Image (cartoon, rainbow, N blue to C red; front, top):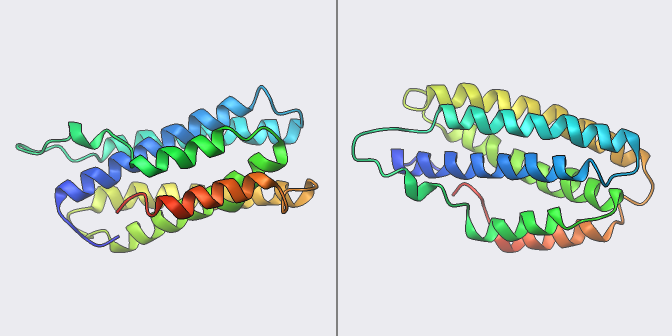
Length: 175
């Protein structure tokens, strides 16, 4: 993500916040319908990490005279479809594949690119919180992939292709 205006930063923060809220809702929503206790606990624990990330993004949302923030509350339109595909997955193998082999690595890559491009002065607070979010995402991704490696059928789960195709069509979230 290239350095841009305060308006561009506000849009990226709003989109990231929206994504984290949706990840919180989706992973948390899977808890009740996931039969495997280890996966159930992972989804429950990590859903709260996403809620915390949304709070961090809210803290650094730009507020300035003349900046119209309300129009940034909408998600990137094509990413709505990505999250709908993810939310619709019903098997644990599909859910692990969609979340930890497709969505989270893509999201983390965008966050790391954003962190590298963020202005060290103007975006100092954003860089601090984004660093925490990236570190947290790395740990969550490693934990999710480790579980995916232990459960049969995750690598070939059809849900992986559905989420992957939706992501390919959606393009970048933050740009």
